[in-house]
Image (cartoon, rainbow, N blue to C red; front, side, top):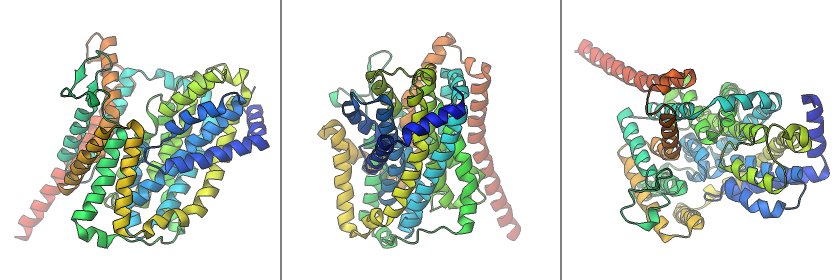
Length: 503
């Protein structure tokens, strides 16, 4: 079956009454779940498995796919309005989305997030339609050395281009790696840094750290630094973007949609790396990098386009190879097997309705999500109308419910408070939180990839420079570390020269 016949088959499935209904339901459920920190798409799809049991496999996957990319849309709302990212890939959205909300531009921020998500989702689905079989071979070519180099490059670029001191950013990243090692070592089975506490055997959950470093830290700032609450605006602001703003956003959204899709194709990379790299690369390319972190519309659009691009890209290894590209698609893989469908190279021929139906549903789902999200912005943003003392209380309760709802352990609530205090002091002393969070997210995967690579090479580090892809990625990582330091030294030299000249 060629691509044209496949697309026709897919739209026949997706545009049926049953197909449209499941795509719509999935999109709505996913959007609502994405807005709630603690209930990510993995949880939602896991709940869907018993519901979809016995259903037609194509319809079941349409529903789960709708939940998946709907959650990528919805995750922006809590990040922008409350500085509370519920998913790791929503963290970069807080960097400029929350400052925009504080400036009284919440409506514009939510509109940009919805438009960027639509563009990222649509471009990546077109790429998925055209290149799925070809890109599956690219995913196979990435081994442990390439994954380690890719993750190191992502971490180094985030640390190097963070606001303020590069040294502070690297200290923050080191702290993230330290926290990531807590728990039972997956390879040797030994306990590490648990200090005899059984509650730490499984490590620390991402949500505990994310909500602590961002949401609770922001709440602490609002409580202790009352001047901050005076700067916060509860206005929705205009949803409209000017022609100039559309022009400014067009390039970044297009670039990051493609880059996010390509990163999503790589099993294990996912939307987190895509959104962080999208943010950092646009900051590097921007003529106004000083605006990033202070309410830049490009800084908001780039990670949203990238993580939605990655969401579609993750379906390439799932459908073409039977390899999950992320935690969410791993759950979907299990669901498909339960339904009697084995994803892999033969899926396109054996179950064209499933393969092409999912791809076609993404075109429709993105349109549904845009139509749903833009009119709902005035209602979603009513969160800003809540009095500040009440909103602070609600955010704290929100964080507690989100964290406790995952593990049902009071110990995690103590950890939440500890990371909230840590986040406040990091903000006070100008230590960026993003490198710490990214290092925590990537720490386990980087350690595993490093061990696998050294096992393959019999302990030789030369394997990282012998392979061209990993060598190129490591070179970019080194340059991203050195270039900002050289620039900082040059700036200091120029300032000293100008002072001496004036004297």
